Amino acid sequence: GVARAAVESCAENFSDGVVAPVFWYVLFGLPGLFVYKTVNTMDSMIGHKTERYLSFGMTAAKLDDLMSFIPARLAGLILGIAAFLVPTAHPGHAIGTMLRDARNHSSPNAGWPEGAVAGALGLSLAGPRHYGGKVVKDKWIGNGRARLTVQDIHRALFLYAVACLVQAGIIVALLMTQLAAPGQPSREAETILHTLGELKDLF
Image (cartoon, rainbow, N blue to C red):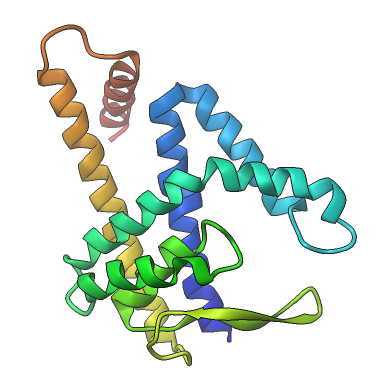
């Protein structure tokens, strides 16, 4: 239903919209971020498995799969860590379900964050659905409830918000570790510090 699709979108967006951009920015700075967002946007616009987009959009879809491979798995791990900080979540189930069911998804990457969310919240995601006017018989991810409610959307959003804070904490910890090491900080570290300084001036 709509609630299940909303929770799945929340899980995937944490990977595509939060973890992956930071991952490519840390590796290659702004060029890496721009390239990733360009590829990801192309995949969203034309990377559909329909007759209209199949031939042209397949390149964008495959390239997005490649660039999201590591970030998607990191996203699942961060969601599992965040589950420790969410009272109604189950961190052990989050990691276990992710490792067990991630490959059930038709996407090579979406199953990792979805598996973590499904396990953490005791839900079943993915499964049979309508796509492009046809019924797609995907496998289930998770072994919890398949009939989701508005409350489940709120729980997923709360887990999403906590996961964002966990990622921010990881970034700050890595940055402080690098600054404490002997020698000059990297260009990426200096850029992050400069950005934080500008944000401080704004507020």
